[in-house]
Length: 122
Image 1 (cartoon, rainbow, N blue to C red):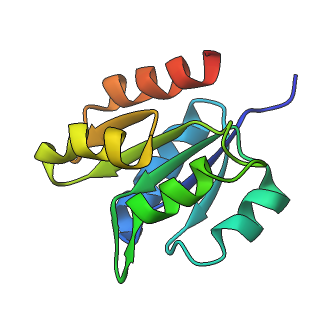
Image 2 (tube, rainbow, N blue to C red):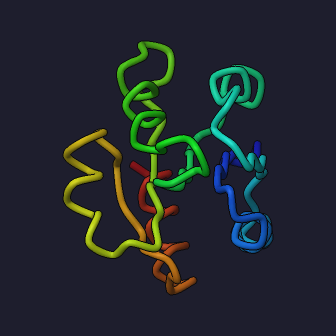
């Protein structure tokens, strides 16, 4: 069986690396991006089954990227889990950009893995 693919986008390289290690240890194929620029090119070549996307990406807003993904015919089916250090963003992020879930940093690893597995099994 082919490995499920996860694209992780976060401008904090430490968090990016840790999430990549966690997802790879769970058996996923992972692609890491430290910026949202060229995300559509990445999506078209990597074909992720799920995207983990930080809300604040340096000079870019992850909510805008999420909105574009969810409003594009070729990518709207890809589940997106938004992540942020701001705990009070959960409701606004899910309503604003139609993300599929939200996880606040720092996150509980088991809870995070469970959310990923739930979205990939839907």
